[in-house]
Length: 345
Image (cartoon, rainbow, N blue to C red; front, top):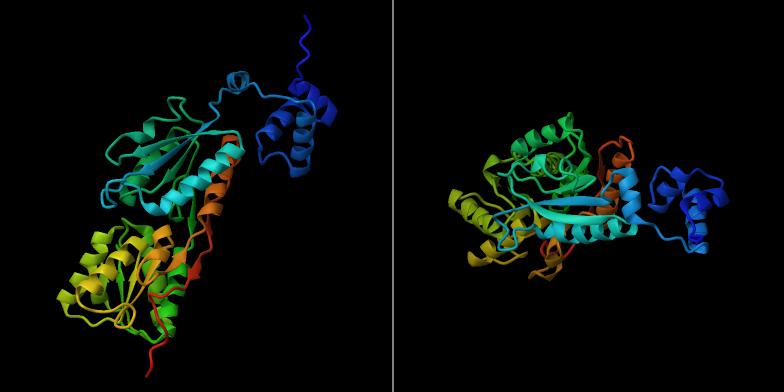
């Protein structure tokens, strides 16, 4: 009995391209130009062509699966997921589905040997990392992935000589804009709560951007106004207690993350002070709860929707044999009530 089901070779003949080009076009590979992709996909719809995933995966020796590894964060609470990553998770899931890839989501416990697992065991064609804990030890594990020839991409800092490919936000300029906004409102003693060491390079870049804004306004950076903190409300509140115990004066707080900033608001209110009348507060990330704090939090917004799309697209480029370069995405300052109006002289 003749099998009348259309094949990828039928599409290739109609489109005037090779069968391998058809395969790439049907999975939205960036190696095929947009006009050809659309032509191939239109012909496939016209012929009512259905991809045999099992046969395709067997031929290509690919799983058609991407692994998304989230760093567990003990300071976040019961979920152990930084809420900033939740909206990015939705974007990554959608991007994978649109490109006919499955997504395998798992936690990366920093004590585990996760670098020797997923791709090496043929569970996934590539890996996306969100979060990294201590960056110094994290880099050591990325070096192992490089040595194994794994396809992976990270969301985080973009540094010279860094292993693999990374996409991140422009932490330096984002923080510069936030501190400049506070300075333009008349705030002059601005505390920074967040780790500014080599273990947290994104926070360090935010501290450097903060310092640049102060310098431009002729204000000397005061080390006593910086408190090391991890991303949690608990650390943000404790940061305010530390500043008050030091006896330093401050009229504004830059939380290196929204969770830190929200905790700082709690600490300020616990001290009997008012935000923003007594102390203005800004954060960084624009997590969903930032607009629901009291007062609503001024913050630096990262484009999580675009970030998710770019993480998936660039990982697929690497799976297809390309070598994309690391880059940074711009940020936007979202002004809300936690900064208040300009201070009167």
